[in-house]
Length: 316
Ligand SMILES: [Zn+2]
Image 1 (cartoon, rainbow, N blue to C red):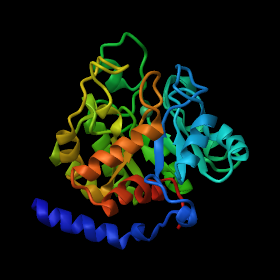
Image 2 (cartoon, rainbow, N blue to C red):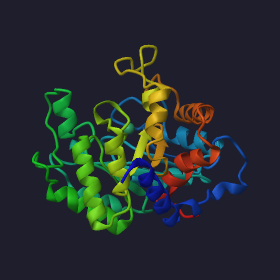
Image 3 (cartoon, rainbow, N blue to C red):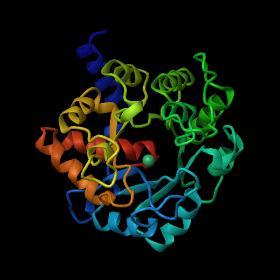
Image 4 (cartoon, rainbow, N blue to C red):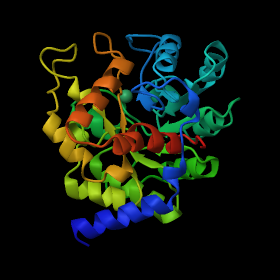
C-alpha cells in the first residue's frame, strides 16, 4: 500500500468509526479559541514532583478557557480517585484521572492495581499507562542506575501481564497508553490491540526524544488502528526554558509528524513542569501556530477535541 492509498484507507476508517459525530457538550458554552478542547495528558499537584499548578487551579483555568475535558496524569500516584472530588469542587468541566504503572504500584506490572483503579467510584480512570519513568527502555537508554519494570521479554514478545492489562482496558473501554516503552514495544502493543479488536491503544508521544518514530513506524501504528499522541511539550523545551537539557522541537518537524496520519493523531500538552508555560497557555500556542502553519480549524478540532474526547469515553 502506498502512502496515498494508506491515507485514503485511514480516512475512510476514521469516517466509518463515527468519531466525527462526537461533538463537544459545550457547543452552547461561551466561544473561545480553546472551546471544546480535551487535554488528556498533563501534570499538576499534588504529585511526587513539584508542579506549576494544582489540579484544582488547572480545572478552573481549563473551564474558564472553554475546555471540555482534562485528564490528569501523575507518574506515581492515582489521580482518578481525587477527580471524583475535584468534579464536585469545579463543576461544569469533565475531569478525569489515570494510573501509571511505575514502581509506586509494584516492582513489576501490577494488574491488580489496574483492576482496582477501573473499579473506583465515578469510573474516572480513563487511561492506563504502561511504565514511564521506570520503564525498562527509558532506564536502560538513559543509563539510570535504578530498578525498572518490563513490558516485554526483550525477544519481541510482550509479557502476559501487558496483554492482560490491555484486556482489562478493552473490557472497561478505557484507553491503554504505551508509556515510555520503546518504539518497537509500542508497535507490538499496537499489533496486540489490533489482534484483540481493542480500539483505544495510544502510542505515547512518538514525536519526542528516544520515543520518536519514523514516518514508516507512525504509518504502521496508524494502520494497526493505534492512536498517535503528539505531545506539545517538545516545542517548549530548549536553552531558554526551564527544561534546557532537551532540544526544542522545530515547528517544521512538528508539522511533518502531525501530517503523517492526522486522522489518527491527537495533541496533548504534557505540561505542568515548574517554570514551563501553564497548560492552557501551551495549548493556545499549539493551536495558534498550527493554524498559521496551515492546519485547518476542522483538523485542529479533530486533534485537540474530538479524538481525545473519544479516547476518554466522552459521548456527543
Ligand atoms: Zn507526561
